[in-house]
Length: 349
Ligand code: ADP
Ligand code: MG
Image (cartoon, rainbow, N blue to C red; front, side, top):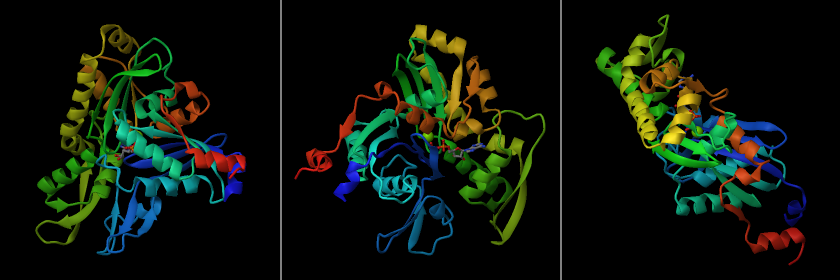
């Protein structure tokens, strides 16, 4: 056991998102990209599965097992279970140690929460842990000039949250975080199909339909997809066709909530920085950035140019990964293992 600490450990960057967890290994690239889902046996409390295996169980588990997305509502229940699992996945199962782990945290994470996630990361096998705020990581990953005096705006639309931030000189100047993201779009679609077609579909079906034909702005050509669910009246399985215009109407309200958060953040941005954002535009990140026409809608609502980051689902972990190389960009906190860990590393008792 103590021997392991003599090896030069790997360096990891981890984005434990409300929908997806990504792990970047320095020198290798993205090693893990799995849903942030845990399946737990409610009777014994035992963890049945984590990640992709657990996601397949959503809505399909026997009575005693529950497959959940523990981070969806920002509660960090089962956080350490997931952290351990994903760190192990990135290590390929070998007896590796981790000399440095950079963990992404939402902006506005309190000191108490920061401390808790740092402790959990150390306990999961890291010798040193640093935290980086998600909008900062997203901006670095999107290739924005975060270290310069010029202001940049990032809108990161995840599953459970949307974070809007204006950054300059390596820091976050103004930000707003709302508990509305891709999942709220799925839920709105579930309600719409129920009300209009008297068909009860699951949120995973709604998400698939949103990805297949969802849009925030009228499309040049209408797209269609099929959804299957339970007929409200007969109770039997039924299919129905849904098109992009319907999805657009169904998700209009949560989309408006996201647009309003962007507008509010712009309003509270100091004028010089707002002028920068005005000329360089807003960058969209997170899976929600992939919604068709969201850039058009945001641009028309704000009057500013809007750019979708190159790999919206990956840019947070890529940004955190590149910060492994430039530690000065990392947040103030960088915690090391308590003394006994260091003693062991030097081989003393
Ligand atoms: P988080 O950081 O919270 O884990 P992600 O950035 O991984 O979230 O984004 C996940 C969200 O993105 C989900 O709600 C998913 O439905 C949505 N999403 C992924 N791909 C698309 C797409 N092509 N169109 C619309 N939404 C998408
Ligand atoms: Mg995210």
